[in-house]
Length: 78
Image 1 (cartoon, rainbow, N blue to C red):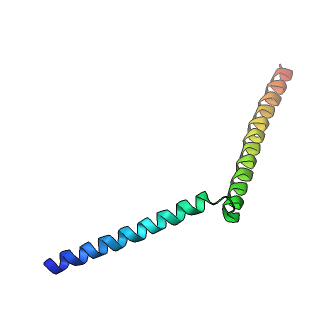
Image 2: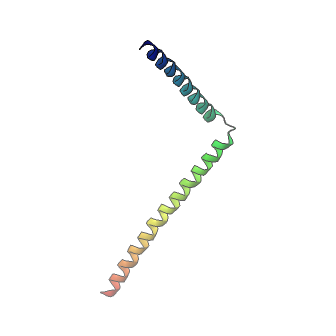
Image 3: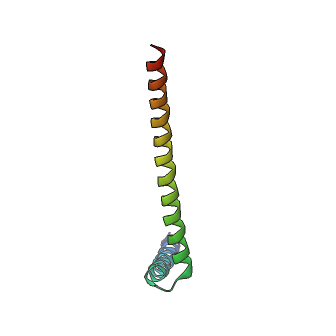
């Protein structure tokens, strides 16, 4: 039983060390201003957001045009 406890303690410290190293490397990547991967990702996210905005505005505009044409056609039938 004591051996199991010592193995678990060693595993816990190794896991904590790996997690700390991963977090440190992640924060180092985020803090590095000359990171081309982060710059590329930021540019892709910005382009995706602008494309999404264009699509939403286009869909709302198309719905408004369809509704307006329907109202005009129904008014002309009367």
